[in-house]
Image 1 (cartoon, rainbow, N blue to C red):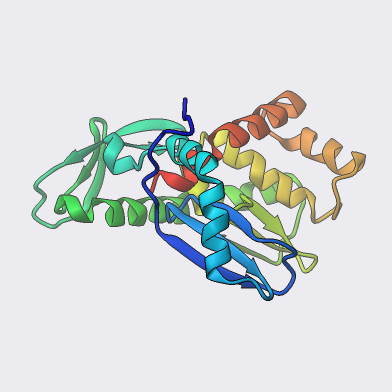
Image 2: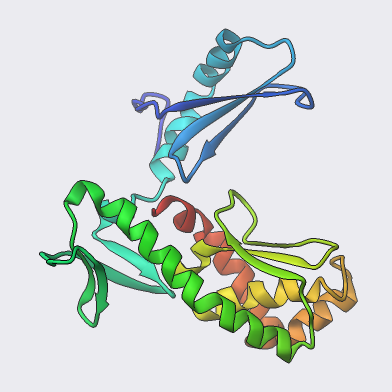
Length: 230
């Protein structure tokens, strides 16, 4: 439990200017483990820092709730499973997955970078064929499919039929990332969140409507881990 007397180790501060902001906005960038201060027109950094100081208890609690990085945990999530990170001497320096864990043949200070690269490659290998399979099942014809690293949304669909998925979903269980694919593909037929849209999602989501609700709850509870782990 964080109290007013809890010392706060201030993370890096990132500054943003916004002509649309009506007040100073404070948020945590989970991926960078940094504080983002957005200033409206006319506001100064001094005002931003004073506002940050006034929110010290919130900041202390947010930092305390932040999941530790995978390297500090000694494990990484992969398709819903906690996989041990095993520092290993590998002559070719590659990162390899075995039944014992993920062997990272690099110096410890480089582990985070190579873990991130491994997860991206895994997503790039697994997601496109699964996405094509789901598209065929739903008789959907997306214009383009891509993987990105996004701050908030796990997937998106444009009116032009371009669908994007976060590669970080490779850390989630298969039913979770399959649900996100189904959700975005359903937008090709219903570009809204009306009853017809949810009926289509529930028709194809793993486990139907209960599975869809389970997936949404899982993402709500674990989304911060996917962003902050690596």
